[in-house]
Every structure is written in structure tokens, then in C-alpha cells.
Amino acid sequence: MSKGKFGYYNPEKPQENRITDVGPIHYMQGLPPILRKNYGKWLSHRILEPGILMHVAESGDKVYTVRCGGARLMTVEHIREICDIADKYANGYVRWTTRNNVEFIVESEEKAKELKKELESRKHVAGSYKFPVGGTGMGITNIVHTQGWVHCHTPATDASGPVKAVMDELFNYFKSMTLPAKLRVSLACCLNMCGAVHCSDIALLGYHRKPPAIDHEVLQKVCEIPLVVAACPLYAIKPITLEDGKTKSVQVNVEKCMYCGNCYTMCMALPLADKEGDGVAILAGGKLSNRISPPKFSKVIVPWLPNNMPRWPEVVNTVKKIVEVYAKDARKYERLGDWAERIGWEKFFEKVGLEFSWHLLDDYRLAYDTFRTSTQFKYTDHAWAVSKAVGGI
Ligand code: SF4
Ligand code: SF4
Image (cartoon, rainbow, N blue to C red):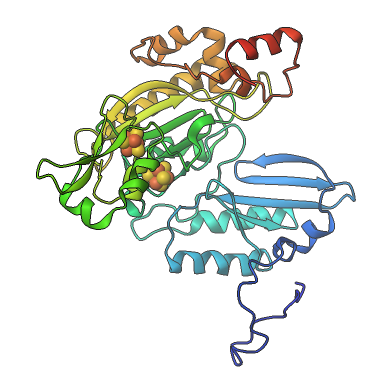
């Protein structure tokens, strides 16, 4: 590996060449030499078997990637074990995908298969896989998710908990490639959606149903009222003086509130977590790819399910039913949204056993413009006229 601009860290002389705030290393230094050599010159790739990919470069070089499931939260011991495996098989190189999968890149198919065998052989004390290999092609890869109750302040559901419960049920689809097309499942624990669940085949979204409670006593001591008022995207908060004539506080217009939690981000005296109010909404049919049809937003198909800890059975059963019906009914290469659109969304609800109402699906006001972020769309005079009519660009 290149010694980079500043050389290696010397534990014997920790102050040597010490410069702070230099940021991360240049990403090229983290690439295996074969990837650096063929950077931007990859011709094709194939999935040889679940969990093993082969990439071919213009130069004729080939690399083999072994993908195994990871977790959003890992112990130091677990990461050390991953690093040991990387040292043994992949010259010390390892990468994490955006869906928290772990990938090792090796130079031969034999080595890839040997590594797959080794990864599958490592088990937790209770017997479950430590590094299940899979998550490629026409299957379900890891669920990308947010922080949940572990360390964010506005979640309406947990992240790791429901993800574990759902993924336990979908595990066979992770290890195989038996679905009509790839299926992406995501979870964000509040509607700020830092997990970007808005365009996944199946998306789980934590949803509050009650406005923030107001602790007037705490609020006047710790919060800046103008900041709280300004934090609300819907102007639902106004400053007030309480009946005692001197205590300054705020009031929430409940009719306007959309339970986003922005005010709680600014002021700890406005908590909105609530046992009865909080739960999970399910969205479906989103995707990013342009194949068969343009990219789509996920649409709401189940407005709310309870946070039934520790295994979220209502959420798990709904997701499982959707995946099973999709696996049986969709045509080859059809993503979940393509399938639902072909059979019709009403039929989709009928097949997966969910209740349909006009409140569901999609009513996004600026959809005319955002749907056009596709290579399949060409602007015409008519299209511009529609944009203008709905107040878009
Ligand atoms: Fe926090 Fe919301 Fe992100 Fe969850 S989705 S981690 S609650 S900001
Ligand atoms: Fe406004 Fe969101 Fe707070 Fe409701 S939860 S009052 S919409 S900032």
C-alpha cells in the first residue's frame, strides 16, 4: 500500500509528523492494488453463486468478491475477526457496503469458494451464522436501517430490533437467489428518514401519531423559544405567556402538527415519543433502477402497525406475506413495484391481504417533477405545461 502523504503512524513515536484535522486518507489508498490498477475500466460482472461476484476489467484482470451479512452495530471483537479474515484471504483489504454487508475481494475463484466455506463455518455460541454469505442478485440483501432506540432522539420505532425480527424470517431469501428480481428492504425509525427508505421495494417507517407534549417548567429553563418556533416546518408552534402572567412558553397547533419531531430536536421539553401513538408504517413499490420502468417512490400500503416488542409480529407477518406473494406471482425480472403496477394496486392489496383505501398509495404534490428524474422521460411542450399547471418547475 502507498505510504501516502504523511507516512505511517509510528506507535513508538506518537508525536512524529503529527498533523491534526487532515481528514480521511485518500480513498485510492484503501483500494486493493488490482482495483486501483483497473479503476474506471471494469467491463462486466457476473454473480457466480449466491454471495460470490466476478468482475472483469478491460485488461482481462478478474476479481472475485465474497459478500456476507454484517450488522449496523458491531462489537470490537467482531470487527477484529473480520480484519483477521481479511488478513488471511484478502491481503488485509475489506469493505462495507451501504447496506452493512461486508465484502472481501480476492484474486481467484478457488480462493473465493474457500473463503465462503470458512465464513459459513464461523458460528455464534448459540449456533447461528456469524458471517452468512449471500445478499446478491435475485434475493434480499441486508436491510439498511437507522439508529433507532439505541442512540437517536426522535425514533417512533426501534431500528435493530424490527430489522432482526424481519430478517430472521427472510433469511432464506438472503442465502438464495430465488425471487423474480432483487428486493430491497429498508427501515427508518422516523419520518426524517435518514435511512432513505423512500425508494425501496419494501420500506418500514417509524411513525408518531401524537403531537409533542409540553413541559412548561423545563422549557422556560433550557430552551430558546424563538429557536423552537422557527424549528417547526409547519408553523405549528407559537410563543405564549402562561396564565400566571410571567412564564414564557409555547403552544402547539395540533391540527397543523405532522409529528416530525423537529421541535424536540431543538428543545428537550417537547418530547413526542408515546407508547400508544408510536408505530410502524409500511411502504412498498419503490426503486432506483431504470430497468423495465422509471425509478419510483415507495407508496404507503399500511398506515400503522404497533410496536409490539421484542419481535414486532404484526410487521414481520405483513412483510413476509408480501414477499411470499411477490415471489409466487411476479414475472421474472419484475421488481415489486413493476409487479403491483402490472396487476393493478387494488389487486396487489387483494393478493397480499391488506385493506385498501384512497388515503394510501401516493399524493405527493410535486411528483410530476420528481418522477421525471429518469432516463426514460423526455420533456415535451405538453410535459412543461403540466409542470406549470401544478406549480412545479
Ligand atoms: Fe433518528 Fe429519524 Fe434517523 Fe431514526 S430516522 S435515526 S429517529 S433521524
Ligand atoms: Fe412542528 Fe414537527 Fe413539532 Fe409538530 S412535531 S410541532 S410539526 S416541529
